[in-house]
Amino acid sequence: MLKKEARKITGGLSKPSKMPGAAYNLPASQCITGSKLAKVPGTVCHGCYALKGRYRFSNVQAALQRRAASVGHSLWVKAMATLVNNQPWFRWHDSGDLQSVDHLKKIFEVCKATPDTKHWLPTRETWMLQLMDPEVVPSNLCIRASGTKVDGAAPRSWPWTSTVVTKDKTCPAAQQGNKCLDCRACWDRNVKNIAYGKH
Image (tube, rainbow, N blue to C red; front, side):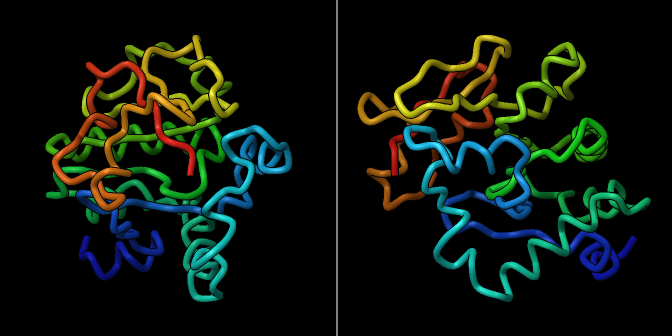
């Protein structure tokens, strides 16, 4: 499959300036759990960055909607693998989240088809993770179950997690111009929890 066709099918990849590689984003307004948490003060989704700023521009919203609609396409897995192939690092959902268990299984297939890429998937849809054994997750994918409350505990139901804190953060981005630079902790299964600073 040509990349031109793959971009047409998937809506194309996003390129967050913070990340060391490409990403794939969906509308934050369609997050199953996050859209509810966004209305609750004290949660990590309250004041969500992906519901304001440049994410509200009409061209960005159009791109997000195209990507969301594409997930059901019969060639989505093949098209995503075409775009992700040869990317050393890839992030799923710099905005948005998993839409279904079938969506997650399709991501597994993309990961299997791109074995030389390290994938990272943060999610608040922990109920989906509880339906599977961590052993079935492709070895090149690190899924991090995200905590729901600022300064709250990490989820206990999954081996790799992330939290949002007001102190004692472990993510160095804030001291590095809001960029990962040479840090790859989010993709590293040896790092059990990442504590991001509240922003």
